[in-house]
Length: 162
Image 1 (cartoon, rainbow, N blue to C red):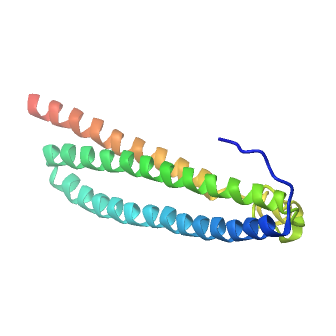
Image 2: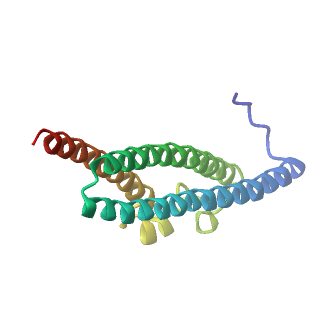
């Protein structure tokens, strides 16, 4: 629910500054959660890939099928958990941008990319956004595990018929 803005008074301006500090702290905490999720799940996928190499070497297709199904589910869960954390990040970033605007913060002191103007253009605009790279990484990971699952099922079927 959007409440109408009150004119800035000394008292509620102080409240806005406190809220900006709180929102920045929450954003930083959520950013840490986001990258921790990526790190933990990437470590799990690395272990699964090492196990996959062993299973490929022994051509144990039922193990490959089970392993790839487990890893595929893990990748899907990772994607869902990351999207939730990313949603929180975006929410806090939007709140920070709104508070900076409300406080009429000069753009050279702004924290939000939406409001930082020149600094955003100079340092961040040209490069790839980490969130986009992570999104493609997750899609590739899901496709990889799905492909391994299909390959393992096909090999198992064709080897059992021979």
